[in-house]
Amino acid sequence: MSTVADKLAKKSSRKTSGKQVRLRLVYIDFWSAVKLSFLGAIAIAVVTLVSFLLIYMVMSATGLIAKADDFVAGFAEGLKVSTYIGLPQVLAFGSVCAILNLIVFTVLGAVVAGIYNLAVKVTGGLLVGFTSN
Image (cartoon, rainbow, N blue to C red; front, side, top):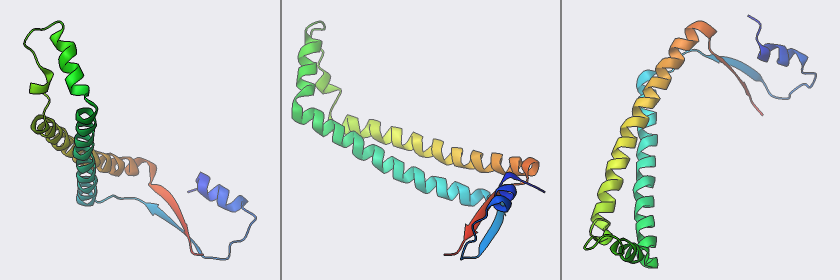
């Protein structure tokens, strides 16, 4: 089977000093992909929570929430933004977003692995070249 990578390798006039190996990726283990995407999703969830906390701390330190209270009080009597935007509310909303992202990214990793395994049956897999220096 002649592929573009094979043709490029034949055209290469430069000799390498190391040994070259060509491997074809023909299968991605489903559970390995799920575990890896779950670990990546945990890292994204931690980053999400920390970013929510930092944004809240910056908004609180600069007085932006108090200014929003003044702005909203101009057209809605008795409504205060600070009652709805507090540290517990921000962390709860950030936790919900992080959990939803955790689920979505884990399922997405499983779906991508499944689609790749189906596509390999048609295309024959991904040709990867390795070399030792």
